[in-house]
Length: 93
Image (tube, rainbow, N blue to C red; front, side):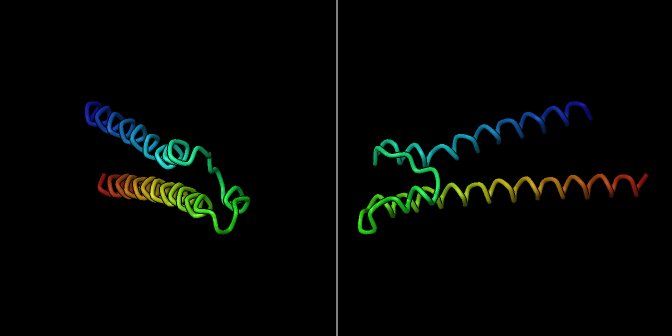
């Protein structure tokens, strides 16, 4: 049981590191290519309506938002699966 738990914790840590790196990619692309940092939709509104940076800002901020949704849904899914596993084990005992 201890080995299995240690392996699961190690996999979770690796996944958290990967998600942290993935979340930094859109901002890094914006900084390298456009030389600007886009942090929220309010920043996008400050750009000129016909400027390509405005649409790039929406894309970068939107992709950040979608990545957070994906991470949150994965966390909630794992929590529910663990909760169901615990309840099934307690019923079986």
